[in-house]
Image (cartoon, rainbow, N blue to C red; front, side):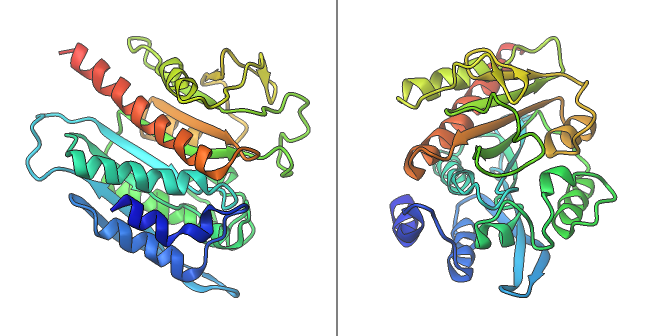
Amino acid sequence: MEASFINQFSEQLSEPPTFSRGSYRKLLAAYSALPFVTIETISTITSTDFGEIPLSFVRYALPMQRDSRPLKLLLTAGIHGDEPAGVFALYRYMLSLSLREIPIEVYAFPCVNPIGVLRNSRLSSAHFDLNRQMTRNSIAPEVRALVSTLEHLGTSFDAAFDLHEDNPSVQCDFSGESTQAEAFYLYESNFDPMRKPIGEQIVRAVTQAGIPVSTQRSIYGERAINGVVQRGMERDKIFDLERFLTMNYTDRVITSETYVARTLAERITAQTIVLESGVRALIEQSSGHR
């Protein structure tokens, strides 16, 4: 199944990858074909160049959970449209979950910014950086749909994973920093002192796959240790998804960053490893607390 899907998107595996309106709809159709996965359209995003494009939400859950209290995870990708590796990796991971029947619950936004992905642009349909618009009263339609969906679910999550890519050539609010990364790294927010961080385990798995990890001691002005930037509650100036989630829905967020100068295939692999190793670490921690 995975090989067939990737073959359909062979044109996207070139550099730079490109999505068409038809291939984006094929991505959503591929989700709808996965076992134990449901998909729904939560909004329609309109643009002059692509017309009406569905914004979707997917959920994975086994019909009979063997665990009375399975882990609940939130996964997001494509909040910046020029960061495609996470969009592919999230599908690949959901496929793996459904085939292996892992007893967890996953709630996912497979492509938060579909118009941005179609344009290969960081910005949204209305030219917003959605990762600076994450508030309950945002005027960005993509953010309003995401927030409304989370509010309707009315649940908290054991952890969230937000898949990103780092492109130092793209102008953003901190791109002037001299300590830009040129390899894989991640941000970890972990506000439960009783739980061990998992960032180091994720980085170790990425390294074991032969993917370079940042060795810098500072990334965009924040202290880094072996590719992990640990974050605290003092981050109150940027209205990004990480901050929004830690304030409202979870006390643990992993934000992964692959480096766009690497091949797309390597970046997809790295993001898939983030999800696989990170969830494995969470399952091990959860089992150890019983």
